[in-house]
Image (cartoon, rainbow, N blue to C red; front, side):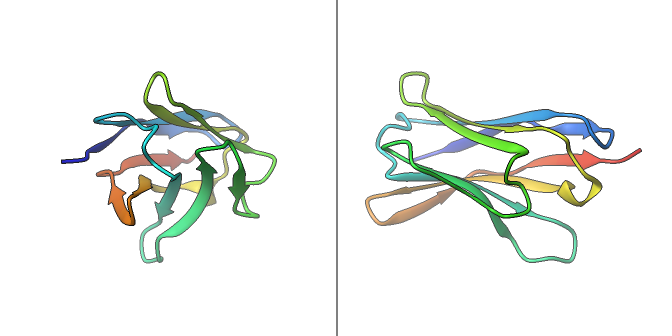
Length: 115
């Protein structure tokens, strides 16, 4: 059974920074693509950033230049560094991984940006 577990998140003031991490049971190296999604209250879940096994990354326009996704196949973790946070970044952040044609999700971690 594959498990993705998020950690980090929390509350921060606008302009601040946070980091969220995702650990995969059995190793993250087996995932072709790993991603961060987020879902704000009353809105659909949206893609924030993705990183492929070869290191290729993509970002949502709303976070480009502020967020950085990384992946460590030895430590079995994927990390999202979030800088210059804005109130509109407030959401539950979910870790996602594709492996063998199956999509796996973590349980989510809350990020709140508020003054």
